[in-house]
Length: 331
View 1 (cartoon, rainbow, N blue to C red):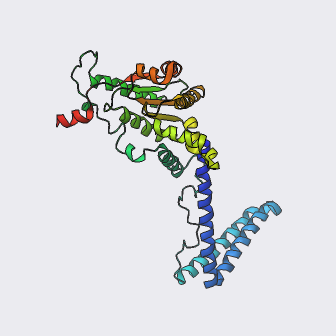
View 2: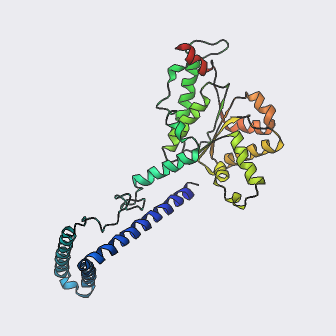
View 3: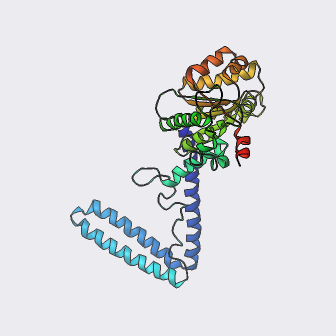
């Protein structure tokens, strides 16, 4: 999927180059009409350049001398052209191709073959666009995460305080990000009541991986089923070219939020299982966030799905008071 997205972006780069070259041609024609002598100079520069190329092949013994003469002539022609442009109040760079990125000339790649910073940014922007959470990630990420909002008081029946538990979860999640490219079969299952930081932690992971040029798709279980239903039952023929559907299977990371809030029946359960199972078989990583307990998951999704989740996912339980009220009361 990364290659497909890269190809799409590079097609946009090609359009930008074509547009820049077309606009340069329009400007050139205007200048030629206004100052015909400049057209003659450009023609002379081109012909001198061809003469320089022929000298290397036809007269190898004197090619250095011939090349020097040609270079000197080209330099004089360029100076004459610059004088004419200035005399006619035309900027010296008016006839240049105005690429959006001067470093790569809108190719996306530097002369040594490395990705240009503009292409890296385009990939990141595309990833954010498809992730469905661009604006949220500006506020919710590892840099803005504050462990101190979690209470450090012991809770009855727990061996760790909520803060200690969250510190442990954060450490595992940071390891998940740092080792994401390893073929370690790691997937994460966040479970616990609402308001304990599950969605925030999903956002932290999504932001960190998007910034590494990974393709991250973040959707609620309800939205995923809408995408599937459109694919299965929609009348639009273009539904078979639906990127939203394909990305559920091909994204580097799929985050399924609010599992259990969608309508549960044989169809929906089978589709959820198909997505998760296919990604497991392809060694593609997945994070599932749910308010359901493991027992409730097994009751809703049948033992087959439940056993898959427990077998290949690291279960991380979030517990403590609802942070939405806890932070308000702490003020």
